[in-house]
Length: 98
Image (cartoon, rainbow, N blue to C red; front, side):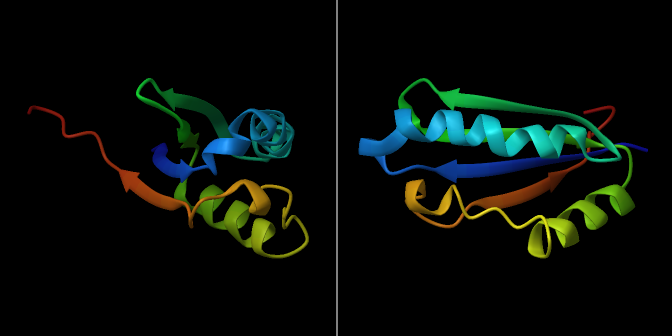
């Protein structure tokens, strides 16, 4: 069963355009990671410094392996100067029948 996660990211407004290529480059490794199905980045129409990443993974194990890699040897610090605050991740499940 696939796992879907939303990552809510707020950028420093004055640096958002600089951040976009950094986001792109960071996500190259994410998209290539074993178990990743897709990652899409959405920009809030009312606030272009607000990004929402929608990640789909093959399994929770794939997510856990990826997150452990990002905390260790795959750690990426390039985004830190562009962040207005800590990103918030939310895992969601389709509410079939609602």
